[in-house]
Image (cartoon, rainbow, N blue to C red; front, top):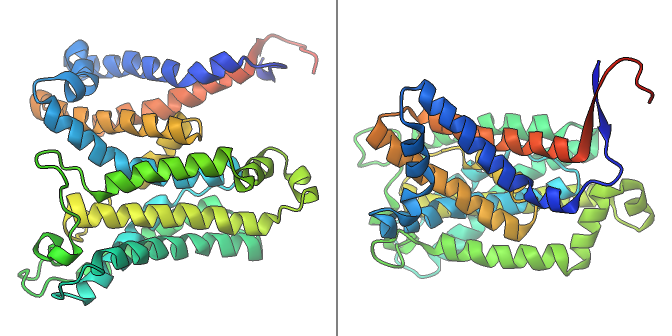
Length: 360
């Protein structure tokens, strides 16, 4: 018989080191995965973690790391508010899509006007699109006590099909030879999210994301709202006695996560993606869940976790091209991070007891 017994006093040092142990375990077992695929594990690990930062073409790759990290960090920051409060938004990918569709549609409706107000308006509308999509599970949770995990997750598929309907219908490029895609935002300067420093790929979304890290840090650690969020997650009954409205907390936390996911979608659309297509969703909303937990739901931790996951994205592209590995192997490698983080967390917070007749 085997069971888990809670530790009376888990080590704070070990809790802080769990992300590092998770990364090391991922490297070890990821290396075994590459051996199974017939590749040199040391070369693969080096290409994933070393080459993007210190390799021959590191200058270009470092910019790409920031570009890929920005949506992951922004979405994870939003998710962290809800996760801290015990509100589980698993549908950030859908909110990411809806933010891109609503914000992108706003810009396309104003084509070909040339005004400095168009891009800021698109950012606002993208945030509103993600916020409204997140408020659907919030309303169903408040009104009918529906499980927000299932509702938010199912809405991802609704959002994707809405995207398909829009790029094959109202938002389809009239000059695009009937392909399922919108106009390119690179051809619409007033709605384009340009590269700020030549050769880096860095755009406005990266700078806004850094600002959001500061905002989230202040909100979580220096503001009464952050205290209420933590209280609602750690002691729900005490939160009620302290005057925290659980329904309002659900709406606010889901709204924040949806708004940030929608904003991330708009920046991605008008920058790296360039246009709406049926392949626009790239899984950032799901990967951001790993980022949030790898960063221990702390804004600074999320910043570094997002950079780490972005390195695996860029490194994954490198080994795909140089070692001819399938993209799925990189996704498995990234999934190992979350698995080992959860596994190490369990070992830090619980003891494994083996034997018969163990007293409770």
